[in-house]
Length: 171
Image (cartoon, rainbow, N blue to C red; front, side, top):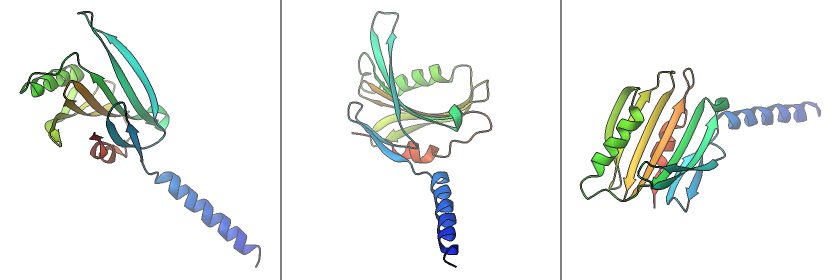
């Protein structure tokens, strides 16, 4: 009987461990430089990329991301600063230009204007020709463009989409 108790505890703890691993909870991630906070479903990787425009100006894109399912699912927050803030009342037009560039050559499944506590945004869901499903929330705060992107290869599901998108805040 003494052996049965430790074996039972071992099996119980093993099952609890599997349950916790499968029900992984997203963790809060804050970028003080980017002035945002979001829930990310795993360890965050970071990188940045310098973009040179045809007019000679440059901007840096900062990326914070988590990949899952051996790279078939990804959660990404990007931000970059536009050369200047759009004129008052022109934010929607700027967001539409960005939307058009993102969705070019894809099948748009849904789109709508959104608002994050007074910050104008756009919600876009589309499928690329290779079957990858992408959901984008973009926000324009002054001259800073934020993009939240979730991608999932065909046959894969991004389980944390709502939690990820709904948790995003700008400070």
